[in-house]
Image (cartoon, rainbow, N blue to C red; front, side, top):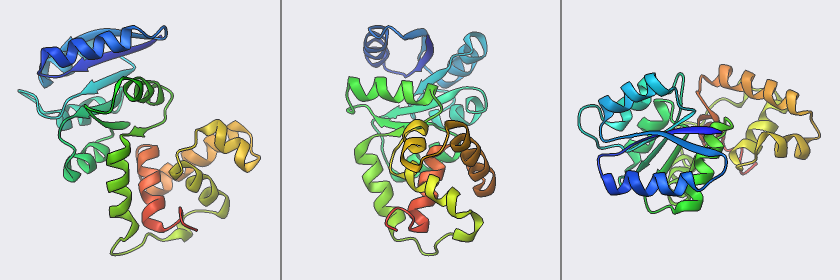
Length: 208
């Protein structure tokens, strides 16, 4: 079972998310709270696999809570505010996903499952804007940081493939893909697959 913590200052949102998630046979909601301080407390108590966090909350905002929880809990930021600076700050703070509240139930469930599996998911409308932003960087990253095979793996991550799909696409074992990804995260100093994908777009790998 994937255990989930919901933090949002709107009760209707918390109730709605809980109803959507608890319909899934593999997901259970361990707590829902109305503010950032309560989110940190609940996370320490329940140790959820995934935390769904609003950005604008009383006490600590979702970005600060993300920073506190991301070392031990996968965080998906769910908000009505999809401003670019929020997206980048959330990802820099270790978020595993970023959804707007109009993303829909299916995408919410998919984001929780992706985060629990160590993957990342971002709302399509947010992804498009982010990738457009990264498509024309002022200065491109140095491709020589990665080996040719690592670049292949990174390219597939940026295309949204799972580890298993990457293994099949590149004719690698799953363990080899995981080894490459661990090496890439260390070399690029990024926290998750979103950081890898961002680097790939800035480096021009996706179009190569």
